[in-house]
Image 1 (spheres, helix red, strand yellow):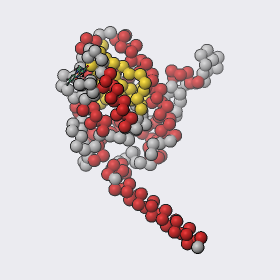
Image 2 (cartoon, rainbow, N blue to C red):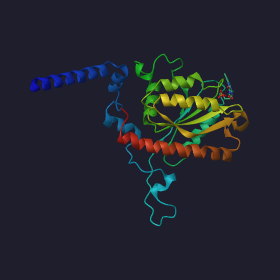
Image 3 (cartoon, helix red, strand yellow):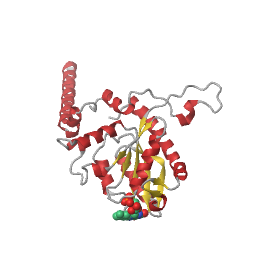
Image 4 (tube, rainbow, N blue to C red):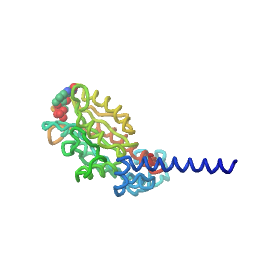
Length: 268
Ligand SMILES: Cc1cc2nc3c(=O)[nH]c(=O)nc-3n(C[C@H](O)[C@H](O)[C@H](O)COP(=O)(O)O)c2cc1C
């Protein structure tokens, strides 16, 4: 009987939908998300944190689509980008912090960009016993961190190399979140000896893929950091501005493109 078969199919479909909804409710992460203001797993809600309510426009370094010397250039509105800097280590004597603070300073001076330092030493993810959505209650510093990462459009990681890899503190920090990294760009800065942390950078590219995020092609290695940086910043600021500018431009390009892509098609 066609009608009975049709009813049967609809009933099965409804049951599957109900089971899927039950499963979502049971998932601690989703349940947690449902309880959190502004970060509901709904497509329309997901658009809000990343685009800051701004209209999308091409980034300035690419001329808004105008040819060089165009007599009638189109106005070039700029998106605002939030690009926090993640420090990779909690070591008390860490010199990578000198580099990370300099990167924050330079990023925050770029038009339309805000930044800030994320210090894993100030967050309770040491051994990663709990990810942020498993914390109940969630400490205020974790809530502020998650909110800041959710509204970020991309990230710079400044990490030392420890025994040919990146520090565990950085892995735990990254593993504590997921959605907040997802479909966003990461720019990598390595700090080390003669290799400038290149092996840590290479290892991190794989980890960033695991977060459903992307790394920008350029990276900056800082070799023998103690010879080129002090706690006040680089000894040769002009030289380091030259090295960082390509990284920043690439990060802004990807951050702008992915900001638009996420707002048009939110990650599921
Ligand atoms: C446990 C440990 C392992 C290290 N292994 C490496 C290494 O594999 N390659 C390297 O270039 N530097 C290595 N270094 C030196 C760091 O690159 C150096 O300490 C530099 O200052 C950056 O790290 P920091 O931010 O902890 O100071 C190591 C340092 C520590 C503490």
